[in-house]
Image (cartoon, rainbow, N blue to C red):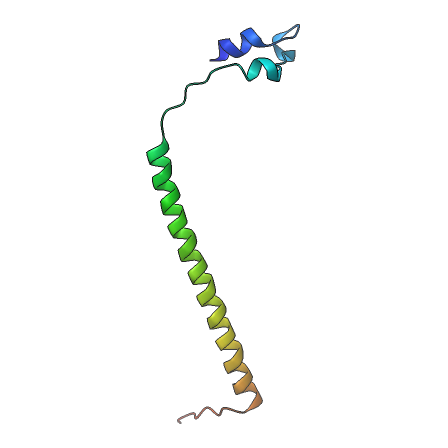
Length: 84
């Protein structure tokens, strides 16, 4: 593969070679068929995204409840009985 890039590159020395897009776009690269594996990974990630969204919503509800309870306790609307 590197030889193909070298063959289509332009420049005086190897450290200044330039591969023009017109040449680059014509180079064929063989890629393995990963579609089933990619679909499986995407499915797992989508499931995890849904779980994260659910947990974030639950966290927001719990934080709202905490704020409400703290307000009730700190303003004295709710009394806590302490057993001695």
